[in-house]
Amino acid sequence: MINLLVQLGRYARAYRKYWMIPLWLMLIMLGGLIVLIEKSTFAPFIYAIF
Image 1 (cartoon, helix red, strand yellow):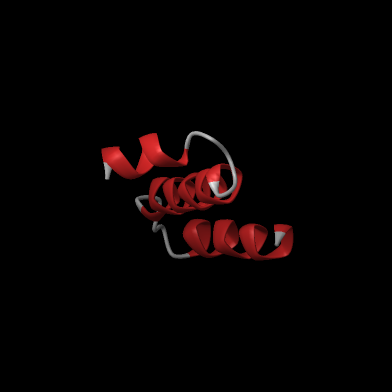
Image 2 (cartoon, rainbow, N blue to C red; image 1 turned 135 degrees about the vertical axis):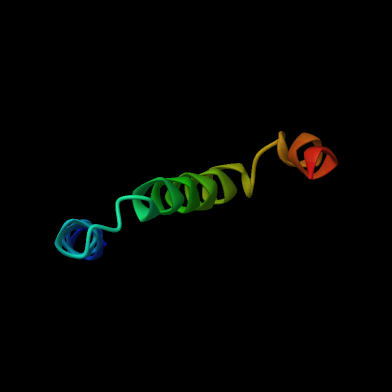
């Protein structure tokens, strides 16, 4: 996983696609949020937001 992130960072630097970095970070954070909240008591509140 870390290797993938390093490669994405190198790609962004090499091709000057710096605008993609915030997109990747948001996708990673959203994925982490889904994994953490999957089996918690906060799930009904998160579903209400979306």
